[in-house]
Image 1 (cartoon, helix red, strand yellow):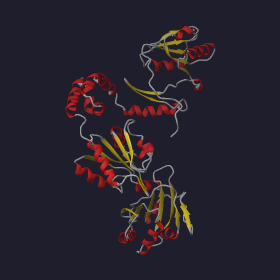
Image 2: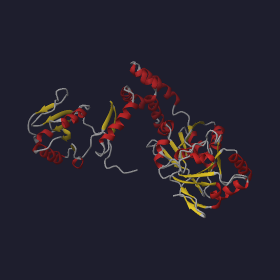
Image 3: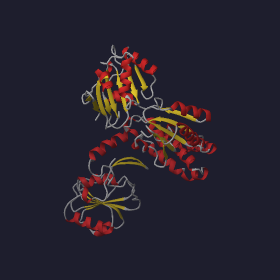
Image 4: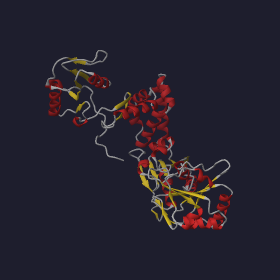
Length: 464
């Protein structure tokens, strides 16, 4: 993730002036934006070409004077010539933030695309690099936010003093506001003129309940790409007081949580367990027992090789509430990456997910029979013993010619592919690229798109 060259903030202009030097269309565009604030907007130009008559602005058809910046919070320069040069110099001399239209190098600030639900404002900026993109993002955000959301925001502001007086504990206070601003019933009441009464009723309930009981959400983070996270997972990450995450969950996904949420990595990587499963169970029970809302963030789907069963058992025994939020499992991400239909009419009637790590001989015998019967196998955690597992499958009756596909880092930008046969995998000493691998075995692999996959060599191959 790249670093920002600007610091996003909301700049206070109440009781001050916004001065726009210029009289053309660019000045008009800035004026339309500036009048959304409570500042006094002044247009100054020797030549007024655009029609400002519909806007609540003062238009001065004369040369710019240094005194025009008295009481100014912001200055826009939207023309060229001597007045533009004088205005820029005067703004610099007084330390007033300056925006020179269409000249990013001379700007102290940029004007973002704005979604306005006053007092709620969403600003989208590309630091002047791609204003068209900012406008497209704005359109998407506009569609997400209901028109009445600003009224709910004002209601929350009007209750601040009362909430602070009645609810002393920060967590309980935050939970009240979260329910207030996200409840469809509250928004409907606000639009019907009953918002204050409904908000008071909700506040009484929160005062009576205090911070409430803790809860643990077992959340599937998917294979690693942020845009494969579910909407429910994103919402709960924003509500969580603590995020307990695995080693394989990428930092950008963890950062989707609230800025002030505590983050605890219980990193379980192959050969290095900083937390045992028993310690993780104890941790999440303790945190929820303290009244905290805990996001237990797991790679893939929590119910697929995620040890969720043990954590659920510990939560049940402690009487802690919990919920499961499914995620995209790595095997399904691998199938999507390679357009491999793991179930395919007349080819594969079923799909089996299994772990190759520590597999018993009876397991392999069963898998071999399933592969021979036409089912597709997706083997997790098989990097270190892939050749051995392939050889044992063949030993139990699986054909050497059965197609095999391997996806490393499924669902991520740095994913890597390999395609061959079960016999080739059994012969080769695989030097896998870094990252978790999914080995797909079955005739359905032949129907996938493995165009860029590396092929198995006689002795060894590398997925790269």
